[in-house]
Amino acid sequence: MDQPAIGDVIGELLKDAYAIRTGIGPRPLAGGRVPRPVIEIIERDDGLINGAPADQYLGEPDEWQPHDHRALRLVRGAVLDIGVGAGRIALELQRRGTAVTGLDISAGAIEIARRRGLRDTVRCTVDEYARATVRYDTFLLLGNNLGLLEGRERAPAFLAALAALARPGARIIAHGTDPYGTTDPVHVAYHQRNREHGRLGGQLRLRLRYRLLATDWFDYLVCSVDELESLLVGTGWRLISIDDADRPYYLAVMELTG
Amino acid sequence: MDQPAIGDVIGELLKDAYAIRTGIGPRPLAGGRVPRPVIEIIERDDGLINGAPADQYLGEPDEWQPHDHRALRLVRGAVLDIGVGAGRIALELQRRGTAVTGLDISAGAIEIARRRGLRDTVRCTVDEYARATVRYDTFLLLGNNLGLLEGRERAPAFLAALAALARPGARIIAHGTDPYGTTDPVHVAYHQRNREHGRLGGQLRLRLRYRLLATDWFDYLVCSVDELESLLVGTGWRLISIDDADRPYYLAVMELTG
Image (cartoon, rainbow over all chains, first blue to last red; front, side, top):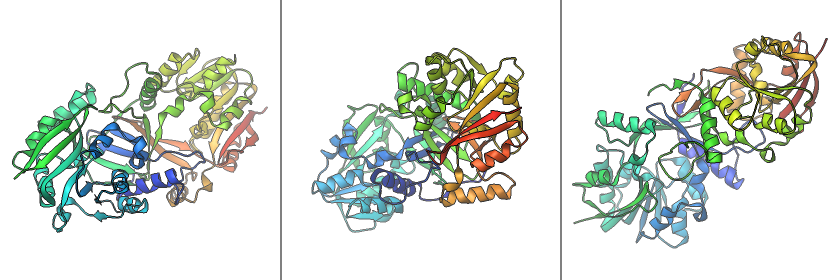
């Protein structure tokens, strides 16, 4: 079998999902007339494969999960939405008059977010952006993007980049998922195997695929609140609240001290 | 990355899709509370990957495509439903009092079809079943299962097996898709590459994946009506009608002559 090419998976699938939702732009042709949903394919390094409808990335506020609404009530000041995607959250903040910048590494995601009306966007990593002089009061890691901490190796640098971009007393509002409530033997075995390799149990090694494209393999962290607290030690960020009303999902608020 | 294990992909995904649709049986745990659709993953040998919601295999008649309803109006006598899956079509025929046998190679599919109430099932290939003494008046290849002809090499043996199972004047009612109307460069290039390898343009080389399982690679034919006619030459089966009201989909009726 031919190997998929490395490319902007998220960008391409957001473009197609946007075209299908709005009727604007060329829609993917699935060989037939019956509309088919755009599916994001997620491969894990144990061979597990899952598909998830990409349309959720374009959800209007009335389609959101309850914790997304509660997250926005915690926002204050100037906001950096990290992994902005198609701008689902940032567009709603902008509508409410909040100063918000959308950051993403995907060129296609930024293109769609801008086409949907998001005015302030930046395409780079948080590390690259940390060299800029702009400062923020709130950092959003929604849509499970606490995962961007990756694991013990990456988390300190990621959190340092946010600290460099932070005004005094700035907050991170992050959506995470506690992975350890499952009894699914596939996941339990995966957590065990990760620990045997010195990784956090829910330190997923993933790649995304869409049509002929794949991402490189990357780490994405699904961690418990205890694990999150241990990752914060020595970073200047302090956990100040957890909202786990939608368990196993949670909203973590972290504040920059000192 | 670990390679997926070879297993009953269709059976496992039908079991999960059935559990989600009905609430009966253990549902797959996706790590969270938000219900997620069961997605069938289809890999093609050029690296193309697609996902399709598996719930369509459980559709009630009011969820069907129009050509499925028209197909059932063409049925007469005793029916063999080939690739019966979860029994979507066969169960409706049984409700109408038609004698129908559901055939599938997937043990999990047969288990779900029986759990849904299908009484007459057989788990084997058509070649294996052709050694039985039972005879049919109608063979159904719906849900795009004209694809089971595979290509020029397999089609004669497949059609001979159906002829061996046929009463005089028996018919095949098959749902196919003409692949050549697309302008998608990914598909156009794939058709060209197939022809360069002596295959029919739409002779797809696929494998299915679900969670940790994969099928072996297999051929699945998407062909034009002209290509279908050329495959029938010398088989005893003759094309007697085409209904292409839902182009690019079509219903082909073939009759056993002599």
